[in-house]
Image 1 (cartoon, rainbow, N blue to C red):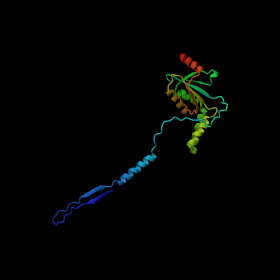
Image 2: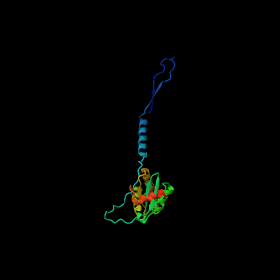
Image 3: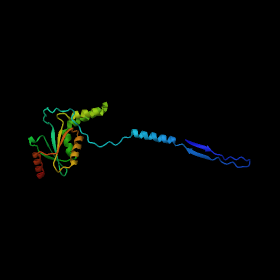
Length: 207
């Protein structure tokens, strides 16, 4: 707090002129220091720190038994990344002589395809999100329920492959699109089947 100290200066003689009192000012900084610490504590407790940019990966809900017989994939596609940002896909297994088709990484390309093939899962997760907001569902519970939906037999399964000309960015772009379109089951394989290599050569030669 500010303090004013009065000094001398008043005349003692009868005919002496009266002088104005000299005042000295001293400011107490203690309250300001306390206020600074209070503000610092407030901002530290309420500030939101930058979250690290990570890629969310969904893992299987239940641990699979090694003795279980694998069921046939009902809804699956294979993506093949190549050089010059080229991307190709085919549906089903190689035993059914699939047709390799070129597709772009843009929203009207890969994302549109994934949304169409995974429409049921996307719809259920959207409904779950609305329910979570109304019931104030915990984040851990919400993520667990999402994994359950993505593990349904009819949910989309994506196999990601690449040739020796593809770059790491291509795989990251694909996985980003899978996360956006709520595809929870996908596998990355860095080796092409001989039949896939032949299909890739043919489509590049005769686009």
